[in-house]
Amino acid sequence: MIDVVQFIIGGLLIVAGLFILIMSVLGVYKFKYVLNRMHAAAMGDTLGILFVLGGLAVMSGLSALSLKLLLTIVMLWLTSPVSSHLIGRLEVNTNSDEEKHYEEVRH
Image (tube, rainbow, N blue to C red):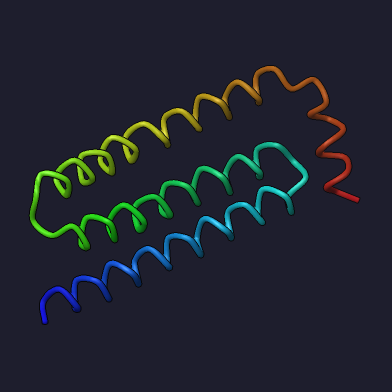
């Protein structure tokens, strides 16, 4: 009985994570400005990976594998926002067409 509950909860978490990741991909293709695209990708992969790996950890039960998955989640939650912030800062500092972008948004 507990195995069935673990499987259902883990499956729901994986499906939710895949839905978030698909929405993130659609956001990357929908937005035109690079910082908007980057934000959609960074937010989507952080939350999507949390749900997918969390679902896999629930499915594996209390084991060394679930501990490794939880440590992977923690590592990704620490590194993904920092790396996307640095990439965004690089884009802002090196963007020469910034004036053109803001002119298009106003009209």
